Length: 238
Image 1: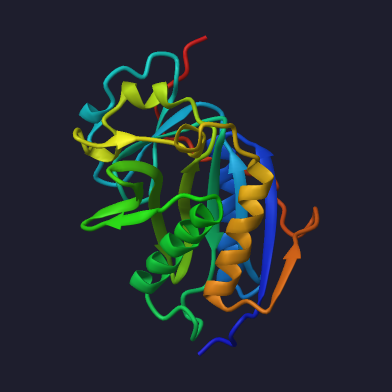
Image 2 (image 1 turned 180 degrees about the horizontal axis):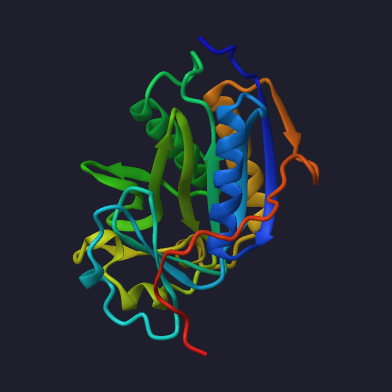
């Protein structure tokens, strides 16, 4: 059994293209599979993009128009990413004693979001058998993960100050009955992304039992001579 890792590296990537962030995740997964890197959690905002998970239905994309639609290896159906949304990509080793299975990983990921929302006065709940986090019957966070040789990637998207009109162009997660909401909509005011990010990081580290949290410095990992994966189903219009 691999030695348990108590250190968590985190990095805020700022605004980054979806495919570039995916290429970075894949690089980190490769490093972790070789035992060359501690567990990592990435925070990012994406430019406007729709992503379609494994087994997702293209028919659930109603009118993408100028927004690209990208096929993804994560679970779930179609969702939207864009400015004002906190996207979280944990890249952790499930062989650790603290994270014995994918189901436990998902429950802790969900609980990290629920506790974060509670810090801001919102009651986030699960809605089995559907994934994600909800406020009443309104979905506030989408979850779609992948696991490659025991290393997780992809993750969670929490709507903070998101322009929710972009969800009208799709059937979010394939659920035609579900409404989508944001922290700003529920609280009546724009939210500070950094504050929400920091609370999420704190809860994530506590739930997964990390004793040390370090900011990843530039050069912790590199992508050299590597083109972003090409999986655009509907290229962006010029």
